[in-house]
Amino acid sequence: MKVHHHIRAFEQVLASYDGKLPLHRHLVVYFKQNKQMGSSDRRWASRYIYSYFRLGKALSDLPAIARLAVADFLCNNDLSLITQHVFPTADQHITASITDKIAIVKAQYPNFQLKDVFPFSKELSEGIDQQEFLLSLFTQPDLFIRVKETHLPAIKAKLEEAGVPVKELSDTTLALPNGTKLEQIIDDARLYQVQDFSSQKTGNYFKPKPYEYWWDCCAASGGKSLLIHSLEPKVKLLASDLRETSLGNLQERFQLAGIKDYQKKAIDLLQNNDQILHHYEFDGILLDAPCSGAGTWGRTPEMLYFFEAYKVANYAKLQMAIAENVVKYLKPGKPLIYMTCSVFKEENEDIVTHLLKNFPLKLESKELIGGYHDKADSMFVARLIKEQE
Image: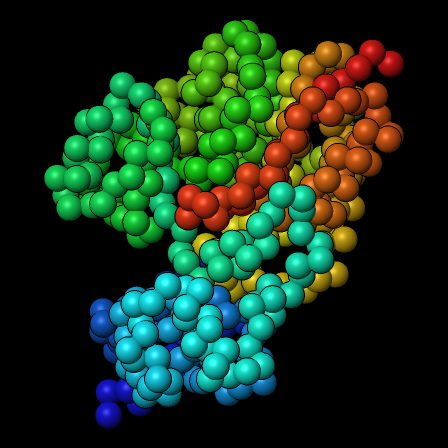
């Protein structure tokens, strides 16, 4: 039977994965090593493994295939062979709403608890709608692109012409189905930036002015640097990161975007960097801090499945240390923009409270951006102003 072929393929992929690599990278390697798998096999195996991890820690006492049947039912509106085989009562309800599906699962498996999917609810940041957030974990977020306002109508038309469903969320933001092959539709990659909608919203807190000198101190591949430059093209930038590979990616993206007035440095923010930055004073600092990434687990459900609660405290210590080491390079009266893609209070509000207690900073504004309303990630952002000492 074909269903047994599906089951065997899923079990083999699951057994091969230990959570150390991002799942999408692991699957690329796995499929290269198992070339006997056709395109249909790869598609179903990918769907099954992502659905499985979206169930988090719920129903952990069930066999893997039973858990998969439930997870795939909750995550999809078309019936899979495994769900049909293992959870046949789901057949007539496959297109029901997620809340109705939860009730159906609970009737079949009384031990099912939504809170077990994400068993860290007591540590959520203020402003999170716990029920909406938990339900969002069963849905793959959209792909978002940021474009210039003048280019948006033409890009939208081109995507629609290619048969891609497009939602216009703002004058500069389009939402597309995840997995859209943009490079096959839009020839000129300079016309857009892939960036989550919530990440784009953090730009409302930057408020850069022409010729100001800003530091993106955990720049990674430059998403926030590109965002601030789109808000104020005449801003001057220092982009730093610990990883040279990330800075290489940033340089490629800046070249593509035509940005030349910037510096990049490899800097370890856990060290004393006075020798490197002794003469630097910044008009603004972007600190997109390393974090648990819990606000992005809708995209990376394997992280939800493998995450261990003790890691939140480790990230919080790292965030405090980095923030403490960068504040001194900020001019009085100027902003530190503290950001994470976490939904944990310990990484968000608690870090802000620590900074307010220990440094001459005042809180101007803060927000937990709940991306689950837009099929986007969730992010925290706070704008802190340095006072005269």
